[in-house]
Image (cartoon, rainbow, N blue to C red; front, top):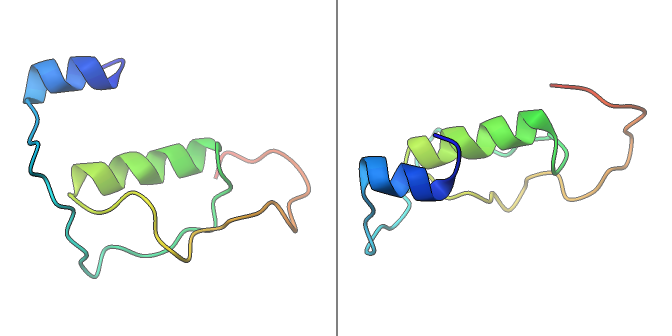
Length: 69
């Protein structure tokens, strides 16, 4: 799938979807916009978890360069 519209066409959608918090819903230190963060967000959606964890990284402090992980 290339975008959310293709995903909806392929999988349908549930207007009443309510994400469930489970033990798999853990914070990430991946910076916003990084490939790692995008992968984590995709995994969260696939598992039915909320997208945003309140303890996810919220800044770029301590980062020294680009990293895929």
